[in-house]
Structures are given as C-alpha cells and as structure tokens.
Length: 203
Image 1 (tube, rainbow, N blue to C red):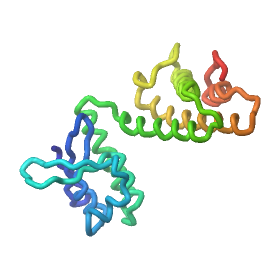
Image 2: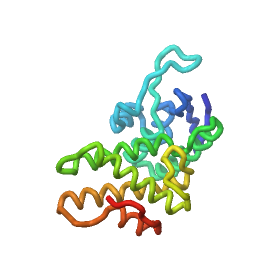
Image 3: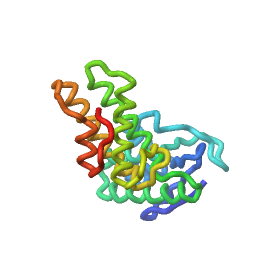
Image 4: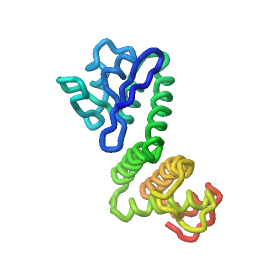
C-alpha cells in the first residue's frame, strides 16, 4: 500500500496484480462526497473490487484508475480536474517504480472501446476488420516515429502510444464512414498521408 496526499486528503493506493487501485472512501472524500456510495453509483462495477486492507477487519471498496476518472467526470467539485491530473501523475510514478508501462491500462480500455465502436457500426463486422484497423494504426504510428518497419503496440514508446489512440480513432471512423456510404477510398492511404508516412499497403 502507498499513501499519497492531495490538498490535505490522504489517498491510499493498493497494488492489485500489478495495477494500482485506490481506496474508494478516500477518493470520495477528496471529491467532496458525503457518502462513498453517492460516488460509486456513477462508477461501473467492473472498475470496483472489495478487499480487506491490512490492519482492518471489514472489506473496503477499491476503485481502479479508470474508475477514478469516471468518478471525477461526475463530480461537481471545482478542482475535480486538478484531482484527475494528480491521480494520473501519482499512478504514473507508481507504475514506473514497479517497472510497468505508464499507459498500459488506459490503452487497453481505449482499444476495447474503439473495437466496440467498429463492430457495432459496420453492416457486417468481421474479425478481419478489427485486425485491419489495428494494423493501419500500428503502421501509421511506426511511420510517424521513423521506424523502418511496423512496430507492434506492445513495443511502442509512451509517445507512440499517445499518438496511436488518436490515429486508431480516426481509422475506425473512416472505416465506419466507408462502410456506411460505400465510399471508394483507401482508409490506410488517407491515414498514412495524414501522419506523413508512406503507405506500402492499402485497405
């Protein structure tokens, strides 16, 4: 467990299988909620777990990093955005100290949402569409960052992963529009041109 301080509020973070989760009660207090449950009703259950903390008998609710961001967006506290940035920086430092990738957790969540958007919007979605979208994004990022060949997402730097999120979003939206209006265009060529890379494949 790590204890960090934000504006006089102590926030306890617990390492759960390599990911840092915060004690929900601490987060609720920092965001100005009188009752923790009032905050948790805005957070999907998949971002919450229960655990018995060291030195305590009763179970405490823990909230994941992405769950904290969900809670922040529902808070009316004026400095909620500042709290969000603080959480990001704290967890970034905790991840780095443990040798973990900074954007690993958020990147997985982002890709899941992007693939859901693609599969739900296409007329006849297929697994190859998901592969195509990710391949185009990976190649575009590789081109932008000067790699001689396509780099897999797991081997990308933090800056490359940041760029990949926006590029994947653009790729998905173009694929959806192409499918919806039967457009005669190359998604890969448009994306590669946009990031300044040279396309060696079409899609």
